[in-house]
Length: 457
Image (cartoon, rainbow, N blue to C red; front, side, top):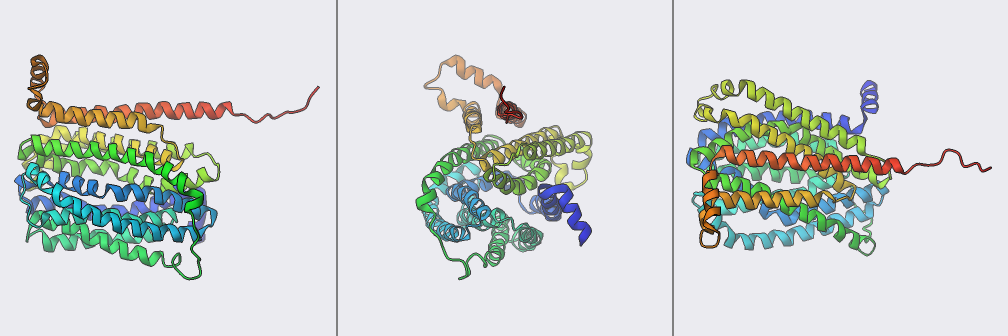
């Protein structure tokens, strides 16, 4: 329709595709919210409910090598597509699939020795759950081969169709599997829609793999720059994964079952505050990358993305602060955790701050700037060490002075309120550094001025 094309031109590609993906993903989120807030607490007992988040984090950590590969892959597919070098896109896709298969096998072998220690600390039995956790993480990362290709090639319509049907497919799978075996059924519900998305993506990429496009070598020209790009990406993802993994692990490992289960429930509500930012990042990365390759300025893009992400999340936190207790009293399965209401708004603020920071890091990564790794990495590492240290201080008794052990004991750190305070401050600090970095970038650009009058005397 003509009027839709006019609207698209007026609002720009960022807001147009963000609006489309937001609408589609929010339909899926309604289903996922039902799954996370009602279906899962109904079938997963309280003694195991708190293990879901750390096990999901472990699944993501197992797929980390693939994720690092895919972030680099996404950047260069977008770069080649912007230049119209589709022969290089074809070669890069082919090599990414081969490397993904190799890493897939390596992770499966490694997980056989790693997972028993995880299950012991999560207080759950292994059975077939170990293989399902591994498969969920590795397939999730492998699926990013396809989704990153669609994202980099800006096939947002196809991505929207994947998002539209993935959530209903997950719901049907969970309705069948959760009553049989709760934890295992949960991860089966993660795997099935992932496989569906991969099949759809292969169909969407058929033009790239057609015989009309001849594969073209890219490694000799760009191999070194790829490794330079991948190194900071790896560092950033390692620290980010360490932070989220330790947070969820500490809450499950050090806290009672009821507190880790309560954290799971309020986190399902709190993550609603990151929905806008998540959709923005998905569209912002390829657009920022394209503008950077064309030497266009993209600071307006990132300021809009960060601003909307932060404001939407903070507004939701205010709503939870006002009506959180009434909300948790609506459903019997939630009523058990009504005492966790004060933490709901705090966790929503944390989610809002972090998705805002993710907007910034995605933009900087797209522009091949990695200065944020210095402070982001330091904050993540210090938080992880502090949380595990103060909640398990007795381990250090033979080596640390008695006064230090006494100080850590007086903190009474093994409680959800204390852990959330640490997480909040470690979410505020990066944004302060990011604001300073944006201001510095703006001043640097203002110093570069083109003379308007070159006439001499």
